Image 1 (spheres, one colour):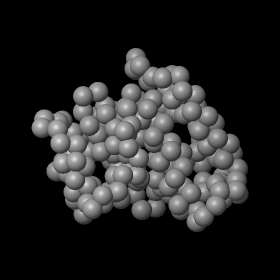
Image 2 (cartoon, helix red, strand yellow; image 1 turned 90 degrees about the horizontal axis):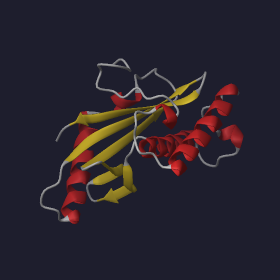
Image 3 (cartoon, helix red, strand yellow; image 1 turned 120 degrees about the vertical axis):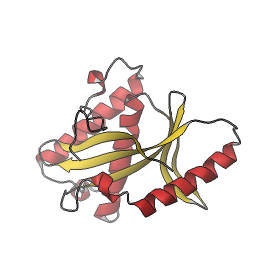
Length: 176
Protein backbone atom coordinates (compact mmCIF):
# COMPACT_ATOMS: atom_id res chain seq x y z
CA UNK A 1 0.00 0.00 0.00
CA UNK A 2 1.35 3.41 -0.94
CA UNK A 3 1.39 6.05 1.78
CA UNK A 4 -0.56 9.13 0.79
CA UNK A 5 -3.70 10.52 -0.73
CA UNK A 6 -6.36 8.16 -1.97
CA UNK A 7 -4.97 5.14 -0.14
CA UNK A 8 -7.18 5.41 2.93
CA UNK A 9 -4.12 6.36 4.96
CA UNK A 10 -3.55 9.61 6.75
CA UNK A 11 -0.10 10.66 5.62
CA UNK A 12 0.34 13.14 8.45
CA UNK A 13 3.40 15.34 8.86
CA UNK A 14 5.54 15.07 11.93
CA UNK A 15 4.20 18.20 13.62
CA UNK A 16 0.78 18.77 15.08
CA UNK A 17 0.86 22.39 13.91
CA UNK A 18 0.25 21.28 10.30
CA UNK A 19 -2.82 19.19 11.11
CA UNK A 20 -6.17 20.47 9.83
CA UNK A 21 -8.02 22.75 12.21
CA UNK A 22 -8.30 20.33 15.10
CA UNK A 23 -8.55 21.22 18.72
CA UNK A 24 -5.18 20.04 19.95
CA UNK A 25 -4.03 20.49 23.50
CA UNK A 26 -0.83 22.38 24.12
CA UNK A 27 0.56 19.47 26.14
CA UNK A 28 0.02 17.01 23.27
CA UNK A 29 1.73 19.34 20.79
CA UNK A 30 4.70 19.93 23.10
CA UNK A 31 5.14 16.25 23.92
CA UNK A 32 4.90 15.18 20.30
CA UNK A 33 7.38 17.85 19.18
CA UNK A 34 9.81 16.77 21.91
CA UNK A 35 9.56 13.12 20.84
CA UNK A 36 10.01 14.01 17.18
CA UNK A 37 13.08 16.11 18.05
CA UNK A 38 14.50 13.17 20.02
CA UNK A 39 13.89 10.81 17.09
CA UNK A 40 15.60 13.21 14.69
CA UNK A 41 18.61 13.28 16.99
CA UNK A 42 18.70 9.48 16.99
CA UNK A 43 18.37 9.50 13.20
CA UNK A 44 21.42 11.73 12.94
CA UNK A 45 23.39 8.98 14.64
CA UNK A 46 21.52 6.20 12.76
CA UNK A 47 20.37 4.54 15.96
CA UNK A 48 16.79 3.21 15.62
CA UNK A 49 17.04 1.00 18.69
CA UNK A 50 17.96 3.64 21.22
CA UNK A 51 20.24 1.11 22.90
CA UNK A 52 23.16 3.51 22.58
CA UNK A 53 21.01 6.04 24.43
CA UNK A 54 20.94 3.78 27.51
CA UNK A 55 17.49 2.16 27.32
CA UNK A 56 17.29 -1.15 29.15
CA UNK A 57 16.11 -4.46 27.76
CA UNK A 58 16.18 -6.03 24.30
CA UNK A 59 16.35 -3.58 21.40
CA UNK A 60 13.12 -4.77 19.75
CA UNK A 61 11.15 -4.16 22.97
CA UNK A 62 12.67 -0.68 23.33
CA UNK A 63 11.72 0.10 19.73
CA UNK A 64 8.18 -1.14 20.33
CA UNK A 65 7.78 1.00 23.45
CA UNK A 66 9.08 4.07 21.64
CA UNK A 67 6.78 3.42 18.71
CA UNK A 68 3.79 3.08 21.00
CA UNK A 69 4.65 6.30 22.80
CA UNK A 70 4.99 8.16 19.50
CA UNK A 71 1.67 6.69 18.33
CA UNK A 72 -0.03 7.76 21.58
CA UNK A 73 1.06 11.39 21.25
CA UNK A 74 0.39 11.39 17.50
CA UNK A 75 -3.18 10.28 18.15
CA UNK A 76 -3.58 12.91 20.86
CA UNK A 77 -2.46 15.52 18.32
CA UNK A 78 -4.99 14.13 15.85
CA UNK A 79 -7.78 14.78 18.37
CA UNK A 80 -8.19 11.32 19.93
CA UNK A 81 -8.97 10.98 23.63
CA UNK A 82 -7.03 7.91 24.73
CA UNK A 83 -8.76 5.98 27.52
CA UNK A 84 -6.54 2.88 27.79
CA UNK A 85 -3.06 1.66 26.90
CA UNK A 86 -1.92 -1.97 26.77
CA UNK A 87 -5.30 -3.24 27.96
CA UNK A 88 -5.10 -6.98 28.60
CA UNK A 89 -8.11 -9.26 28.83
CA UNK A 90 -8.97 -12.90 28.25
CA UNK A 91 -9.33 -12.07 24.57
CA UNK A 92 -5.84 -10.64 24.20
CA UNK A 93 -4.17 -7.24 24.36
CA UNK A 94 -5.33 -3.93 22.92
CA UNK A 95 -2.47 -1.47 22.37
CA UNK A 96 -4.53 1.73 22.56
CA UNK A 97 -8.22 2.50 23.01
CA UNK A 98 -9.48 5.99 22.35
CA UNK A 99 -12.38 8.14 21.32
CA UNK A 100 -12.21 9.85 17.95
CA UNK A 101 -15.18 12.11 18.44
CA UNK A 102 -18.22 9.86 19.02
CA UNK A 103 -16.44 6.73 17.72
CA UNK A 104 -14.51 4.35 19.98
CA UNK A 105 -11.32 3.26 18.23
CA UNK A 106 -9.32 0.15 19.05
CA UNK A 107 -5.84 0.94 17.80
CA UNK A 108 -3.14 -1.59 16.97
CA UNK A 109 0.36 -0.09 16.91
CA UNK A 110 3.01 -1.69 14.69
CA UNK A 111 6.60 -0.46 14.70
CA UNK A 112 9.32 -1.51 12.25
CA UNK A 113 12.91 -0.44 11.66
CA UNK A 114 13.05 -1.94 8.18
CA UNK A 115 10.71 -2.50 5.25
CA UNK A 116 12.32 -5.88 4.47
CA UNK A 117 9.16 -7.68 5.63
CA UNK A 118 6.86 -5.02 4.18
CA UNK A 119 5.22 -2.03 5.83
CA UNK A 120 4.43 -2.27 9.56
CA UNK A 121 0.67 -2.57 9.01
CA UNK A 122 1.24 -5.74 6.95
CA UNK A 123 2.08 -7.50 10.22
CA UNK A 124 -1.57 -7.25 11.29
CA UNK A 125 -2.59 -10.60 9.82
CA UNK A 126 -6.13 -11.96 9.79
CA UNK A 127 -5.37 -14.09 12.87
CA UNK A 128 -4.05 -11.00 14.68
CA UNK A 129 -7.18 -9.11 13.64
CA UNK A 130 -9.34 -11.89 15.13
CA UNK A 131 -7.46 -11.62 18.46
CA UNK A 132 -7.94 -7.84 18.47
CA UNK A 133 -11.65 -8.20 17.68
CA UNK A 134 -12.06 -10.76 20.48
CA UNK A 135 -10.32 -8.46 22.98
CA UNK A 136 -12.40 -5.49 21.78
CA UNK A 137 -15.65 -7.45 22.20
CA UNK A 138 -14.60 -8.37 25.73
CA UNK A 139 -13.83 -4.70 26.48
CA UNK A 140 -17.19 -3.54 25.08
CA UNK A 141 -19.09 -6.12 27.15
CA UNK A 142 -17.44 -4.67 30.25
CA UNK A 143 -18.53 -1.15 29.21
CA UNK A 144 -22.18 -2.29 29.21
CA UNK A 145 -23.26 0.40 26.74
CA UNK A 146 -26.12 -0.56 24.47
CA UNK A 147 -25.32 1.50 21.38
CA UNK A 148 -21.71 2.13 20.62
CA UNK A 149 -20.02 3.01 17.34
CA UNK A 150 -16.54 1.55 17.11
CA UNK A 151 -13.84 0.78 14.59
CA UNK A 152 -10.37 -0.74 14.32
CA UNK A 153 -7.44 1.52 13.42
CA UNK A 154 -3.78 0.78 12.85
CA UNK A 155 -1.00 3.18 13.68
CA UNK A 156 2.05 2.35 11.63
CA UNK A 157 5.42 3.55 12.93
CA UNK A 158 8.41 3.10 10.61
CA UNK A 159 12.07 4.06 10.98
CA UNK A 160 13.40 6.47 8.35
CA UNK A 161 17.19 6.96 8.58
CA UNK A 162 16.81 10.62 7.56
CA UNK A 163 14.24 11.79 10.12
CA UNK A 164 13.72 8.99 12.65
CA UNK A 165 10.35 7.37 13.12
CA UNK A 166 7.46 8.28 10.81
CA UNK A 167 3.91 7.78 12.10
CA UNK A 168 0.88 6.96 9.93
CA UNK A 169 -2.71 6.47 10.99
CA UNK A 170 -4.94 4.07 9.08
CA UNK A 171 -8.53 4.59 10.16
CA UNK A 172 -11.02 1.72 9.85
CA UNK A 173 -8.19 -0.62 8.83
CA UNK A 174 -10.30 -3.77 9.18
CA UNK A 175 -13.75 -4.92 10.26
CA UNK A 176 -15.10 -7.64 12.48
